[in-house]
Image (tube, rainbow over all chains, first blue to last red; front, side, top):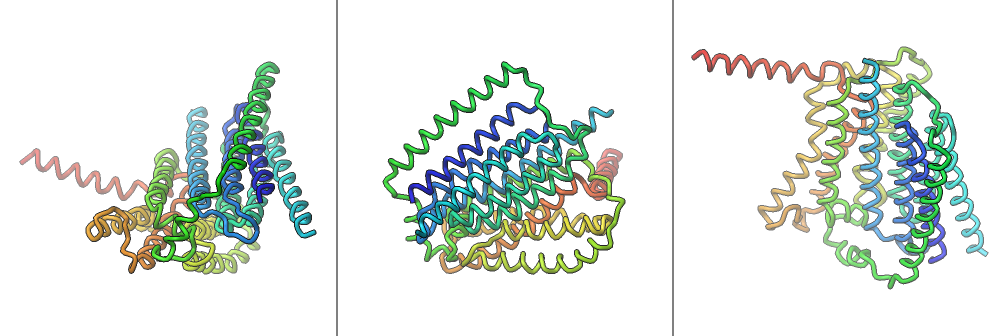
Length: 94
Length: 327
């Protein structure tokens, strides 16, 4: 059980690091948003890896509920950032 | 033997996930990056299922991969350039790399420490012991809509705020000109199926994986499909109804909370006998709000004629005050 928790937590950290690096490297909005979403997915993976309690047992429901909330908030934030970006582009054209 | 097979499966999933994340972030074409991101979302859904979190697997497949993907794909043409190239100087790149690697090592140490040191006592025991009075038997739904209902209420507020920002900032994107008869034919079959699946997910959320968020996103997916196949369909929207649907989730949630405050002295403290029905009522309203919010977010701004209703009432108000002044 601990080996799966560790493996997937480390994968989550890997995802977070890849996303963070790309967020810092890029200038444009869309690539940055993608990278931030990858970052967020990494955090979710760490949560769920720690909630895992073996194949036979049920995983801890509290982190699951938190991550479910997180997924919905992430998509809302993405939609909002895209709207802001679109407005910025429209202002540039004027 | 079985353990070794599980381990190989785990390793393959993790390597594939990291590879997809890396290519998403390092490819030079935005279109390609978004496509890879959607693929990564679907792989994550498989991983959630592997880690025994089926509620999340459903949510990730519909929201994380589906709706996010649709939002991002439709946003690509808002920007002039499709290339994603970094213009940081070599020194800056080196510093970013060193910073990221150092942070990764620190975080790995912290997580290793956390898992090794944990005494195994979790909130899950508390959830399990109180599950029988929560009104539902799916523990994730119990946490979302009973034990931590505040979180979910505020989450709906976050979704509403985000969509209001989208509506304030922009008009909706121009309609597609190309209409595919093939897509229209498929949509006629798919949309009823999506609506039924959405209703099923809403209902089944009480005792099995599913719930308001998955159901709402599924409904939004049906609306997005309709919008793609029949681009002028948004002209038929009743905009007053749309406004009501947008806020009904929070409205019902707060009303139930206040009603329970009168009965049980605490905001959102359900009476155990009614908890199941109350949760279903809140979830139904939340499903409608989430579906409306995500559909509007996909449209990218106000549908045509959104302000008309407001303008009419505003001018009415102005004439009213003018009359008052004259008198």
